Image (cartoon, rainbow, N blue to C red; front, side, top):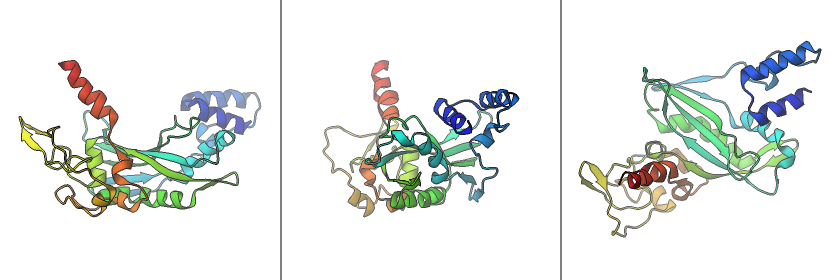
Length: 264
């Protein structure tokens, strides 16, 4: 009965209050169920909060988060396929009246229809500004995902293999994660090495100029020195940085070009 309720809870994304109400009814009928949904889903009673230079960080762990999700849809997953991970980081304010903000590291599985709706927080930074060091901020997740990519994850005596499909961030978060100049810098384009021109209070790039494209090798070797601010933690992952850290469709197209065309 408890296993059935856990699967129902995860599949339908039941709210905490709703789950507790259902458990209370079941308990009144004499069923052996916990009184609180946190016991049902085995929520850890404590987490280690790490103090960082300008804030604090909590890491939930890939294994701890992914294992119950994979168990729920275990029989629906094709073990011949490597599960591709989508990664996102972004900053968001906690409230309008405070400078406090969160920088979560989010994960999703993008090539399995049964799992693609899950957006999973793996770690969260809290502070008055964004993390001062991308290396310090990304370090716990980097260690965790390196083990996952190398060894996989054992669930019900089966080994799930993983690879990084893409990393999607808005322009500011992308520049922070790559440790490069922002999109308003003279060499801010993440796709090519074209130098921008400052025109009418904004950085512009002329479409008729054919500049060399960036490559994974040129990024790792820092060929375009004006583009880089330092080393990126992504350099330690088995990915093609230029291809896997892709352009953000929502901000570039939907809220960028499309919005401008509608205004005209």
